Image (cartoon, rainbow, N blue to C red):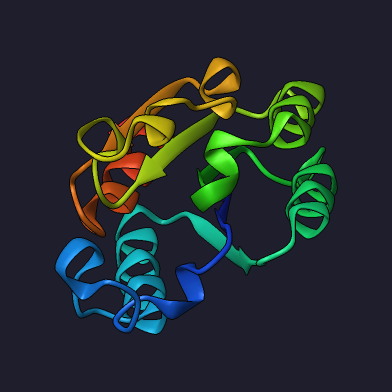
Length: 141
């Protein structure tokens, strides 16, 4: 089994960006945690992070026929991107939406998720461990 771990804008700034919301762990810490769990589950993971919407769409399209699942934290594109929604719908790969914080408890505009309509599950507000939950879910664990 192969899972794409896809992260949108500003997630490369984990540990620096608003640590009171997102914590002090870095993007590298996140990737290490996911890789450790993936090894435990005997699943391959590929990481991709971009601050550009088109780069994320391209990564989703490249996953077609190559990946068995996608874990995506679209960042701010959650609330704006029909392109990401359409890409996930087009490839038909089981996708889990993940958010480190709970957008429903923040500003009103963050309560809207376009991509959610194409996802099999949403995990929000569980910190970085939400990614591990998503990985386990896609692996049926």
